[in-house]
Image 1 (cartoon, rainbow, N blue to C red):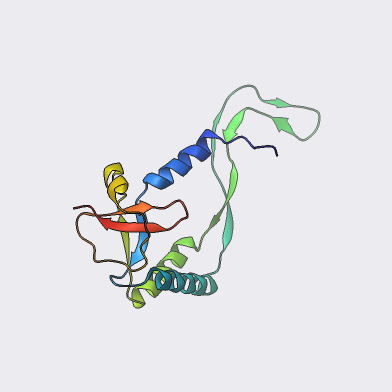
Image 2 (spheres, rainbow, N blue to C red):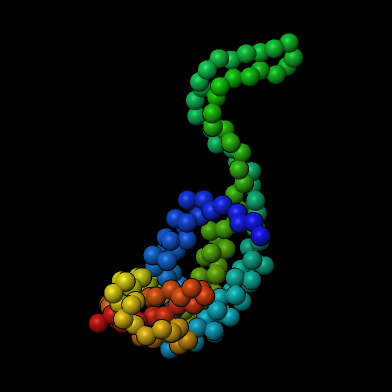
Length: 155
């Protein structure tokens, strides 16, 4: 078996995901499995109501370096940079708003729960949150390796 090299960017992204807060929807006393099902339903409905609409954009040419040479044909070669072409989903923000509205109608609010300090994470018993607890000013989240999370009160 041959292992593929891992870039520094991949490692940095993986580590930053561990340190990032948990951005989720929240309803005290709600089951995490119900939250996930409600979110999936809202996202699918939002995608049906506000489908992906890609538009092609181009960055402006940022500058010019070097010589500019035109040969015998209709093409010239120069040293400009920028002007890259990219695509953007022009409906993404609206789809997010539709998802937020749907989740709000189901009783959820978007929140961001900070990551627990290493000391809190080491002292907390292993586990995962299945029912969303009441939050306090000391609530924080531990992200588990399997993608689940545990909300604890770090008092």
